[in-house]
Length: 288
Length: 148
Image 1 (tube, helix red, strand yellow):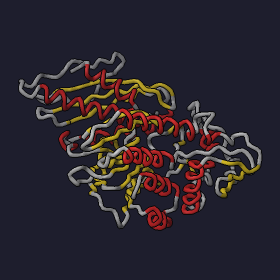
Image 2 (cartoon, rainbow over the protein chains, first blue to last red):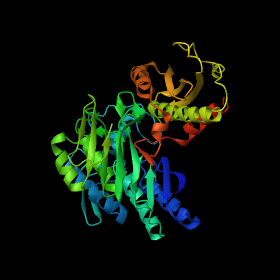
Image 3 (cartoon, rainbow over the protein chains, first blue to last red):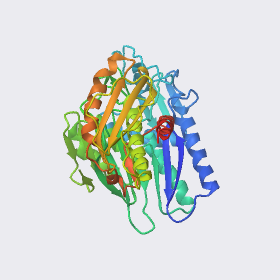
Image 4 (cartoon, rainbow over the protein chains, first blue to last red):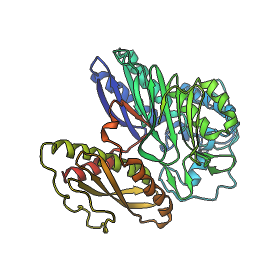
């Protein structure tokens, strides 16, 4: 198995392939794709598409096909979470301090209201300025696209990982990939193992990006960082679905978990702040 | 990048260093306790004296956190067979406001690592959930390598 590591989207990626060596061409394609995805959809880059409406007046605007794809998915997740997941939350996260300069000094955000936005085809309608943030669902999408690039170049047996989220096909001998699941907040401790075969996995926790009393997963209705859930893991058909699932689990009341799981065909673990762990009925991995 | 990720990175590196140290000395007599930590700023490390055949590896690393620049020290005690028997962390926070959750982590770490064979991590292709930055990892790596 050959493993290639690189940086992208502010984290470490690794691509492992079984049987055929990675060519310069496929590496170049992957780096180019991840680079342009970051330039287009990072909240931290002024010229990105998600920042294009930071000073917009109300109106209808045409957006790119990829932006449409991401927003279409965001709408589904917004519905499934009862409106708690919403990519228009960018200004709230920035106000809390997680902005491009990593100010980490928070303003009073009690007046924040989620901006209204709607989408019809590739036409986005706004009431006023909006800062979009795809932090909850963008990486999974990017991971799947990288996997597609490998598929097109003939790398059947592979696993693509970006900062702890991943998608895998299988090994040449037919085995799946064994993935140790980190226990949220307890480094070097495994909560269990999942074996991925033509599946994606995503993990999310609120420990890694904290400042003051904030962390990076913020409920736009209460305007507070989510405290009930401290971490979760999801396994689905692809990395994007798994990534959407973890965002949904963090931001939803447990009553909504079943519907989320059904929509994304996911199995999952949810770690609560009181140390309880919720395991979905269809969970197949080992647990320690 | 916040404290916990840096702590996690350093802990992983120390554990990895333990493997190298142990495997590179496998044929030799167990050495007595290793030299003192390279960190000039570290305070006295509390705790029991390591048993015969044990060795200690220490390091301290600085990292940028939302609260500013912070320093954290680690000492890992390995017994003769390479098993971690104790882990001592030293928080040296520049921002006293963040001490509270730092203490919570310090309490958790020894319980999580104590008695866990490093070889338990075999047969794993990937780790889900970890998102380490390159700079911290490499920095801690260099510091540890210089002691082995």
